[in-house]
Image (tube, rainbow, N blue to C red; front, side, top):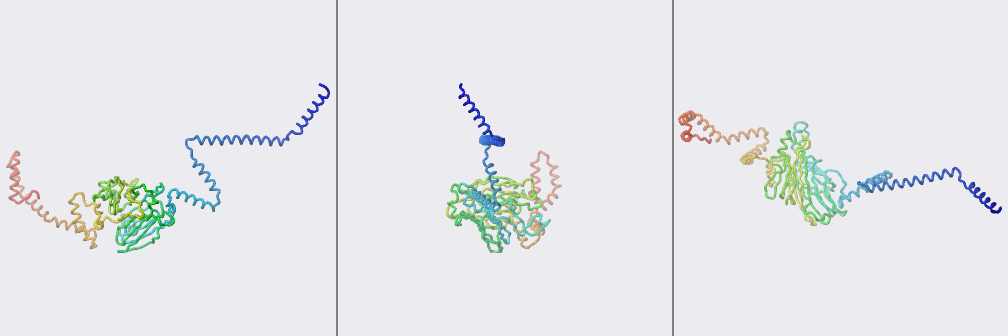
Amino acid sequence: MDKKTLLGLLFIGVILVGWWIIMKPSAEEVERERQRTAHIKDSIAEAKRINDSIETLNQAVITDETIVTENLLDTLFESLPDSLKALAIDSIRKKEADSKYGPFSPHASGNDTYITVETDKFLVKFDPLGGRIGNVQLKNYHNYKKRYNERVTDTLNLYIDSLSGYNLTLFSQNRQINTAELYFETDAENAKITGEESAVIKYRLYANQAKDQYIEFSYTLQGNNYMIDFDIHFVKMDNVLDANQSGLPFSWYQVTPSQEREVNNERTRSNIFYKADDEDIYRVKRGGGPGKKKIEKEVKWISFKQQFFSTTLIAKDGFTNYPFPAESAAPPNDNPFINMAYSVELAIPYGYSNDETFAMQMYMGPNHYNTLKKYKIDLEDQIDLGAFWLFSIVNKYLIIPVFNFFDKMHLGYGLIILLLTLIIKLILSPITYKTFVSSAKMRILKPDIDVLSEKFKPEQAMEKQQAIMQLYRRAGVSPLA
């Protein structure tokens, strides 16, 4: 290696050492680089962790995207200003109502104001939720508690409003819609009627904004009548309701309070009665009390009967599409303040025409024989007049007419019972007299019968009996008497 080559290599080395010294990073730059490298490593690790978490969720047996969505929505909702939260809530509720109730979604909320109609017989409160008859208070009646404890007014609650009602099930756009969950619209006002006066209360569910498609519950009350006309009117609903049902389910349920002192005795006299298309009257439980039955006949009327009061639903053209499950049940834990819980699943025929009405009536009143009889649909047959046919005839044609005759004279029940006892005694007096005379003659003839008994031996029983009968005939005594 010559001198020039050696100097060249040395010069290159000096240049490299100088470059390294000049380009060497400072302590601050070294620290920044270390932090950047660490951050990159952390980011890679976090990305891997997230990827592993997603993979775990995808492979999990339970994958609930709703939880993630709800948490995200909750976070977003809390970040909204108060002025927008109400709008967000309304929007969410509207979407839920649209999804659940379809064309009836505007009725998912509404006015809770009751309409009250007072008649000579009762006070009726109509509830816009479900468009139903709410509370019914019978006038001039009171239960045991009010009679002996804290009697305030002469009214009696026929059933417990909050636990009772009825529901028409509709099918629209593949949705099942319950009218009991919807608020009906009405322009009716409170009313008080008497005598032959009448009041009409109409509740409607509209299926469009034009309000020319609707379902109407119409009630007609009279001042002096326990019967309420109840019509369900379908207007232009043939294109709204799904046409795959032969009838619309109509459920009726009712919980009745205990009205008497002895609730167990009251329950045994409570039952579900119904009149079938064969004109016979049936009951769900023979003997009364809790029971269930599947009604396999067309039903003309069905009654939730208490001991002294009843609520009856009457269909002018009958409830079809049977069988109808019906049940009367005792309250849980044997609650002494509740009599029975009744329920029945009926069906209303619907022909999917442009304008259609299903006419019904509801009787809400006492189990008074003549009151029920005047409607001429055999409602009085649900009253127990005696298991033996002879007792039933006597009660129907003697006891009840005489009792009502004295009741119209405003006599006390104690005096009426005393007079009934005297009348029955008077009617039975000829038979009683004949029985008394025959008994007296039998006592007189007893010594002669004893002589005949001693005269004939045991193996002569036939001859002895013939001799005794001859003795009876001579004395004019009837053994039958």
